[in-house]
Image 1: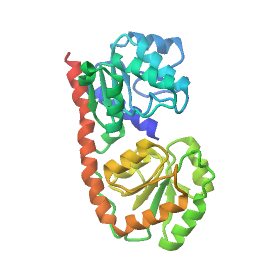
Image 2 (image 1 turned 135 degrees about the vertical axis):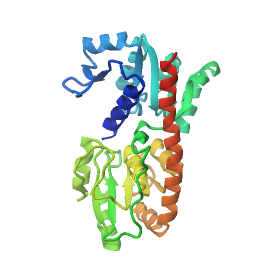
Image 3 (image 1 turned 60 degrees about the vertical axis):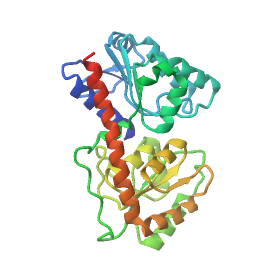
Length: 324
């Protein structure tokens, strides 16, 4: 879900800025898009299209990291060095590298970019450390591309107190703490609040975790629609937190890394660091959220408007570069 949302917003930005351009999408073999040409990212057609492009765009997310694998980082580094056109990086998330090699590759690569939008303050600081001061003007504090949804019509918040039973949304993902017993947590919450639980799978690997926890999975619709709309979310995935905020839904973040914790802090929402705490520790945070629901909702609505404004940096920079 998150990756599809980033691609959709990248294409929307590019077609708005370059309406007559031919767009090539580097993707896995066999993928298709109804309006643009999809080329195999590992094939000669993909390499040729990338080399011949006037503008090479990296469409957001945590692409330049070595936590997934060093091979993934090497692939994106190679794309930067193979590009002949102007290099633009939208809504990038840069975090701490796992290896010294990863740090060196990032410092070696980022100076080749003509413009880099960083989705949070930590990413901006990391990019500044990789660039000489004379190149800092190429950096901008922007926002994750998924904030482009609903930017002109902010979603109204769900009614509070709930008109019927409490609906809780969940987002779980595989982590090093997969032995956590989420089912017992949900059972206790259900007994205490009478809540009905629904879950969103941002990646296919999330579905078994929701099923094992006894959570009903939402029918997968286009981002960012949820039906029924939950009153609050408990979310591990970064884009599940964004999804909640787009709907004005207060959430409790389950931080498996720094980016989720930073987003929760920026939006003024409670956060449980599951790297150091247990699943049952989320219950007092949920009770706190329910007790001060409207306060958290106001904080969320206020802070998300700042992220919408930062998202506009992408469109502004693309328009500026198109005139150069």
